[in-house]
Length: 88
Image (cartoon, rainbow, N blue to C red; front, side, top):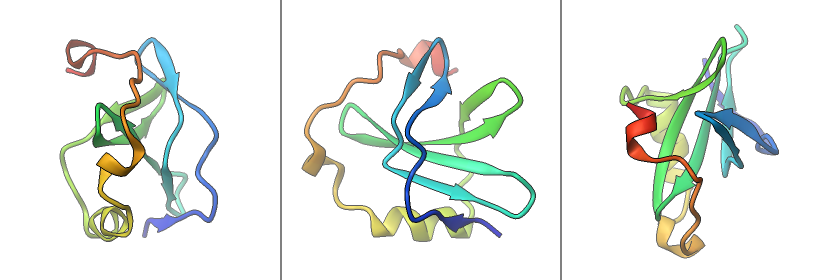
């Protein structure tokens, strides 16, 4: 079962660059999900062998975690440097 960590990871590899998560979830099997901010939107990233990949499946622990976060407009604009084409 995924649980929200008290402190998010400082930096994670995503695509050709790296990003700073606003929240990190981890499970007992080494699974990890990062919630990042991109263009005033939350993006959920699942740990893979070679970095992180965007996910569209929202399991219950992730939905509960997202509900804890403020409206992403609160953060202002933060650009990760990765285009949508690189995510697909």
